[in-house]
Image (cartoon, rainbow, N blue to C red; front, side):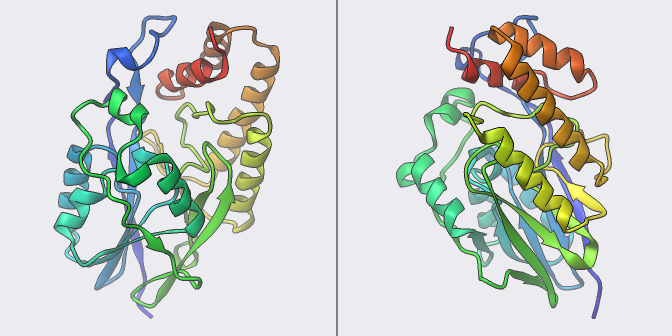
Length: 283
């Protein structure tokens, strides 16, 4: 059987509209984190994972994917957050025969958060005029997974990580996990939806990724200057343990933000730590 390969396209950080959130305590910019799209390809076929958020990002992903010269048979969406699938339409315009797949639970969450295919108000406020049509066209992924040139791609339910009903995609022949938002690659993690037990659930999801023993892990949000080592599993776990400690001790948005930025100085996009703080503390 012929072998597979993978590649990653990383959309750069995107400014948020100034009115979308209160300003950061340090006066820094509010940006959305880098977004990863993965292509898994063989000699003839390929599948894309998570095409991005804005129309411009989707067009760039489609052009990038076309350069591989493969038949794009499908697009897999790891979860319902709009930044991972709202750019599906321009990708489908380039590859109209590609099927869009997600788990039934993720599809239900898309229907809840993007009712009637209308973008969620948060995304419209954060990126006015940049988001195109977002029809709900994902189909339930086959029970035995996806296939590229005879190789299996296996979706795994991960439960609640940075939102509900997330998943990761395991490619055994590559020792690869495309993690969606289960694992981050040295980018501040979004925890506004953590609630009371969200961090515990996320830690269990990380354990599920570790259990398939990948040697390569592509994070949905990654520092584009870094490779995709499996060590980011432990990095993500360490960030969550730290966040749990700071949630328990911090008394304000500013204290959470400042503590997490101090503890993780190399992590990209502190604005997401501020977004987490705004969601956690009503002030």
